[in-house]
Image 1 (cartoon, helix red, strand yellow):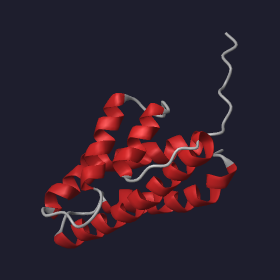
Image 2 (image 1 turned 30 degrees about the vertical axis):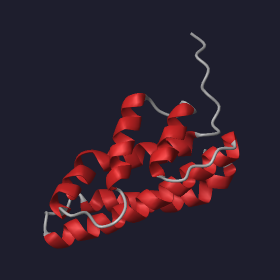
Image 3 (image 1 turned 45 degrees about the vertical axis):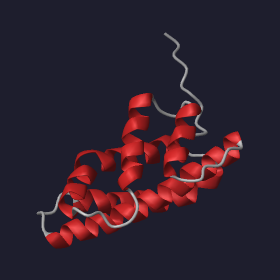
Amino acid sequence: MAVEYLVHDLEKVRGRLQRLHFLLTEPESDAIHEETRQQFAVVYRELNELLGRYLENEFAVQAGDAGELYRLGHEKRLYNAETLRRLQKMAAQGHGKPKDLSAFYENVRDDYVFLLRMLHDMLQRMGEEPEENNE
């Protein structure tokens, strides 16, 4: 269970993330590419807001933009350096309308959707007690 102040919003984002996954299973077309871009933008924005809220509440730090947000998350050991690199690549393309929608769709399908899922799942697990290994 996530920390109390994130539970409701994480549940809403989960539904939007499922919609994004569904779009990625549909036959590719210009319309699907555009709808995927729009759905990605919503999930991306909302997860960044939730990560920012978590970092502010738990570590008293604030970020000015997504790149800084991801860097702060790495500094707080929420994910490793390779994940940070991938998140920063996503941040560089995550806002506005991409010039090449087809290439952006491929990035979402091949990597960004997994990063969004990872952020969601990570925030979902925050506040849980680690399981003890009694072996």
